[in-house]
Length: 125
Image (cartoon, rainbow, N blue to C red):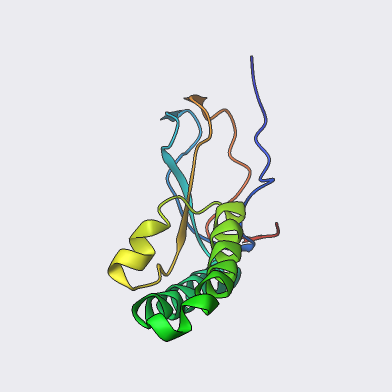
C-alpha cells in the first residue's frame, strides 16, 4: 500500500540536502531531507535563552519563585521545535549551540516511490 507523506509537522525553509531518493529504502527515523529554516533557528535560540535564565534562577535561591515563570517560555520553545520536526532537543542544551539545519526524519518504514522536491526548493509549513 502506498502512502503519501505530507509535512504536517515541519519547518518552513529551503531544502539543503536530500537523503532519500526514488527507490530508496527508509526506516523509521532515517534522515530524508535537510532544511535550512529561520523559524527552526529562532526556536532553538529561544530555547537556549530560556534554559539559561532557568539555570540562573535555579542557582539563586532568593529568586526561586520566578523559576516556574522561567520554565514556561522554555517549554513553549521545546513544543515549537517539536512541531517543526526537531528530534534531539536536549543536545541543543548540552552543547549550548544551535544547529544550522534541521534534519527531517522518516515517520515510517518503506520505499520512496516518488520524491517531489529538489535541493534549493522553498518549503512552506
